[in-house]
Length: 71
Image (cartoon, rainbow, N blue to C red):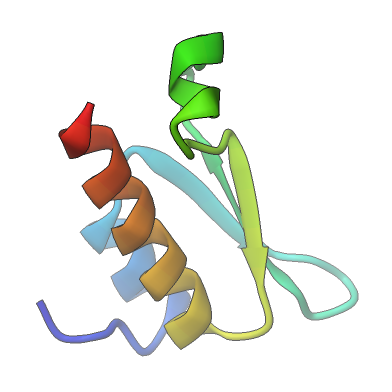
């Protein structure tokens, strides 16, 4: 998958996440309706992540998918 370039592309690529830009311009993503167990958190899964730009957020979301699949 190519790196998404706009928020709509990012949201389409990662439908399990709610993605938004804060008033300060920072990007955030929170899992949609999924609570993580302590085991999942201990293995690197995050409920919410943030980044400076779309490419950084996309990379973090890919890392979250990889970590989740490893469990």
